[in-house]
Image (tube, rainbow, N blue to C red):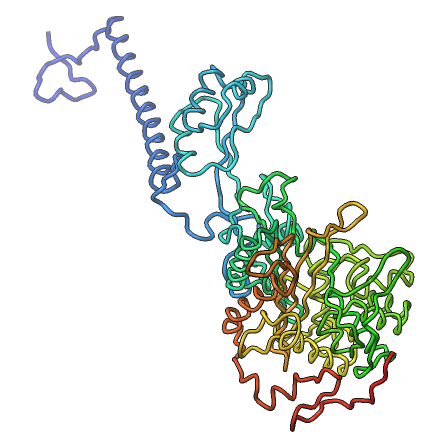
Length: 591
């Protein structure tokens, strides 16, 4: 049988061959091919999933922060933005700052075994109450705090426990590098980082609103160290219950140092009832005793009704009803205005106040800010206790610092205006712009201020505060001793002893104030616990140490130019040898 070519072509290499015919596939072959295809798709999907997981794992461990805290890696500044600004002292030293921390919480619904979870957490956080935490973890709530603001070690330890339902939240914790040293100035914050005392509370909105701009204070931590050291030594020596100290710039109103003892750790503040929280410098209001004769003398002289050369009867005690006003050391003779200040005569001060008049005294005390809280930027600002109505008997006791209660900050701010030329500058805890205006109001004449500076100097050179002398720094001031009220009467062995010192008196720049609460007399002080024996020596020691830090150069205190600026004769004249009187001195008259 002949072969006919297919479409005119012969199969190459196979002459006369027939076209191949596909054989039918079996069911087994088809099933095997389908399985092979499914395995290939599954493998591809598994490879894709594993690749995705690997990429995320590499990214999480190498290019982002790992979930577990790594203590060896420091967070760069600015990587963790904070919600509260730093606080600095006047020289840029850090007083308060915020750091990012982790807090641990739980969703009780996701905790499988509350008792076991509580035991595990207590193993790394030992002060946890296991019973209490177990009850919380077994509750129906969806959120409970376990611990706020963990340390990095604590956070790592909790993380390693791997407890389902336990997670972390980023928070902030406030840190106070100066610790107790500035506790009453800075204050402290709560667990939610809200200010609860001091500057932290007074500037809470500012610290939250301007987080990138530090708040700079007028405080100098170097002066804080010196003030606290000397106050603590004085409290220990005289077995006192507390103390207050202030360093104040009389030209600007800046508070350079403010210490109240006892103090506290702002990182772990005590219970609200603790005496350590009480700020004696601003919140405590006291009868200031003889330091108030500063204002009685200035008021009397500035009124024009009393002259520096006037003489008053100080020999005879003054009887007011069933009470008698007398002097601790009665000299039994008339005294000049300078001698009344020098010897701290209550009798002479009363006569001066009555000569000036009750309305004059009341108006002057209001002008000094003694009838309202100070303008200091703290929530702890005490309200003065003033008489109402203000009668003659009140004027008599106020003349020597009883019958009116003010804070040490009131006293210092007002005294600054008495010696700085007569201008009252509101006190501030903020560093002033050296090129900016300084708010102020004239309260006494420059002539009265000059006379008061000279009387300040007499108290240290010839009066009750010889212990405050600091050679070269021309210290002046006024002592104060006031019995404390216990109920409706005064306790003789419970007193406030203070000294308000200033330097250099030829051109006053700073006030150093020390108040000691309930000092006890010692053999060294011959049984006395008055301001001259207790507080004045402390001020002298402080001046010697802070003078160089404040760039106050020591001078020859007997140089003619210094004597001309600070000298006053006890009869009220301003001449000493060849020294020239700074102001005219009228003829004396006795009252």
